[in-house]
Image 1 (spheres, helix red, strand yellow):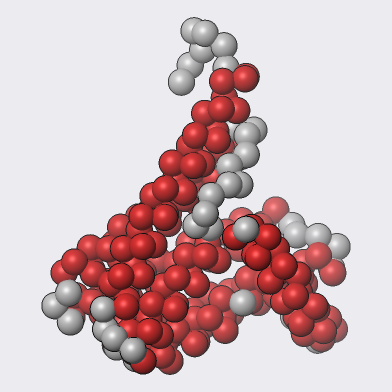
Image 2 (cartoon, helix red, strand yellow):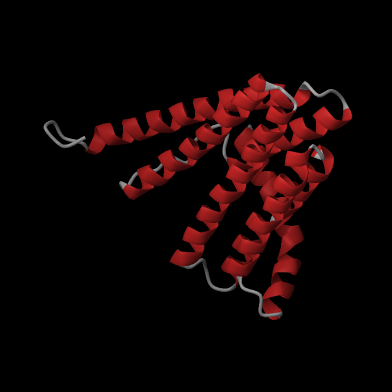
Length: 210
């Protein structure tokens, strides 16, 4: 169900961003420039606002600039497809943005004396990196790992909603969201490793290297 919702939402957003993508391409803006600009925006929202306790402003800024991940992909498709460097840059900038978001959340919770919440944010940071690494490593070995309940979109959505609820409803909402995210992120790592293991069983031979 989550996959169906994500695909439907992404299709709807694509129809919204396509006119913007065409305008930017006509103006001579490259997809790579949008990728970098989006990452800078996320850094400003996370480190400039979220880390200082301005959770609503931080969440909104991060959400807006995180949508450039869809915009640059649409621009690349319209201009003839993503280049290898473009794909590399996009993936690398995603890791920078994710690290900033969860690092900022951990810093904020530490400043509030919430050590348990800070621990959850650090687990989310590490687990999020593992989710991406397992997929990249599997693809580097000729397999796939595009499965799991907590991909990047879901992770940012959960922490964003947690931040908004913490500012507008109750401060405990953010730590609760982080512990939930930590659990589903680790579960996703397990899902992907199991998926790769099943594929490897079909191609690996006894006596081969690990």
